[in-house]
Length: 450
Image (cartoon, rainbow, N blue to C red):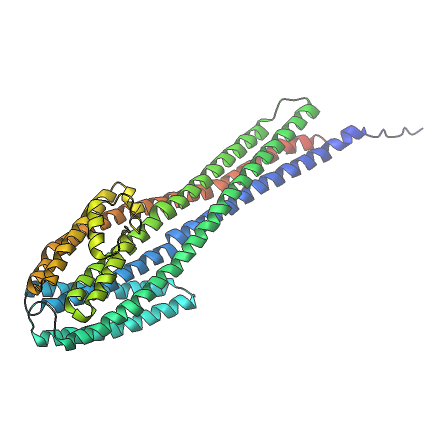
């Protein structure tokens, strides 16, 4: 009589299936963890690239263009008021004009290269190149007429003034606004990118934490199930996989946190301040050029005095209805000033900027007094002496402040990219190692049912 085969108990027959199901869930949770880490890393790197290597440098380059253009026009105005005197200073101004012209052309070419496939930016850059050529021709004509006139220090002949008006109007009304538009367009890209990453990176970081905790819970579940079913202590391979997962989770969360902070510092403490100081420096350069324009063009003297005040208010805003009142306000109180430099004055080098700015405005007060008294030769001497020295000290203080913010910006970008590089080096080993440990921990148990 043939003995019937005894069927395996249902509970025992379901153990391999249960192991496979729990293992599959664990693998899926691990995949979710590493996918979240990958998404977070890619998002953070994209933000660092745009702010630190792409649109951010382009904004700084176009801000440098604004400065170079402003200084070009200021140097031409200086040469025109010097007349036939001050040969050394006239040559220095012309040399500086040529230097700024080269800087403007390089900045324009860089802006054109960085514009990529953006048609609006490319058109603006092309228009600026064309306009700069026209400005150089007009400025050259004014300089040539000025040299032929051989006038005394002070206002040049009318034909020189008329030619220079065309040049400076082209600069102030066309070229500088276009250069500023380039800065704004790329600045918008930086702000949009930062705002996006400031939301995405923290959310992905939370997703990494949730996915990591889920993966750890699944690993513990798998180990507890195996220990109970096989009446053994926890397997060393699965324990090692759990520890490796915990390390990957902690490292990933830390890296994304570092990148989040790097993006914040690069944007807030670095890029924003660098751009602010660059704009303040460019406006200040144009402002001090208005002093020469105020002296050389009597018909527009009031206009240039008002533009000097407007630019001063843009740089450091204080309640003032006219330039005299502003000079007094700067000398007496500036602790609660607004404007571009208002927030920057709280920095450790802010006091140096404020003091040198006060010195420049005080020198301007004396300069305008000499002009009002009709002492044009003395006004030119003051423009070349105390005014120039005061402005150079102020400009140097701005450069020091800008350099400090640039260092903050570069360190933040480098730190963020370095931490991401470490994460990308870790992930392949973590994925491969945990996969091998999972296999080593589960496969022996499944073999017992073969």
